[in-house]
Length: 291
Image 1 (spheres, rainbow, N blue to C red):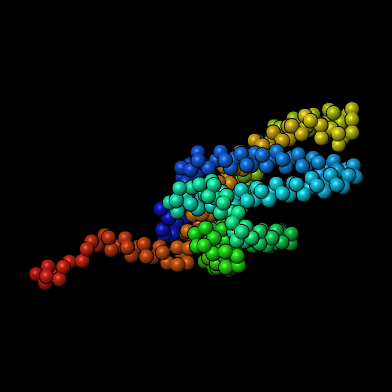
Image 2: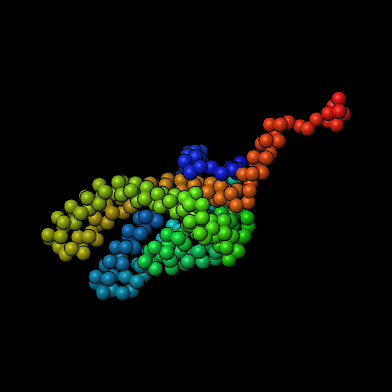
């Protein structure tokens, strides 16, 4: 069932982990497959872009760069599908991978996600700092689309109102601050975990490149089959960590959405009143009261 009432951050983080454990077996394999393939393709297209740039082959370089951005966009849609599945699980609906992907690629949903992505990317390009405000401010847009059937500017505005534009209001329990801290922590965990997995392969790749560079050009050594295989293997295995942390983050955001909505709309007060009424029991019948 949808959680009712305000949860402390510690309880919310524990609840996100519990939800992840309950649904990991169902959700991890399909999303891990997507991220493993995406990680390997990213390495291949990155190598193609480097080769095109160094050799002056602009067609190959630009084509590889465009393909790499397409893979990154696909990964973004995979994160969105993750969030849909997590929202379904938190709301008590059986999470379905097919339903999650179908929802993401509905025209209105897709256009809203693209619009949100453009806003976050534009903020990121402004020296990163504005993104630390815009990113959490717009992070509830997809939950609003899933749970409230709002789309486009209406969904973006509704999500921003739930978060609240003023980060200093009720600091540090402010939804924007809580979302920012949670998202930054999960990204840091994801990068750190992936780095730990990738380091042995990267060390082996660097040793191989240094040995081969003595006998051939540095670019040829970096793009040799052995070096590419080591880099791709590290990226693929690192994507397993990224998938687990990504699912945890999506469960956390789903819970934060319900928690924030309850705060804004007073659902926690209604639940408290209902609980008190249940404790008091039914009101006495008029005749019995008179007696």
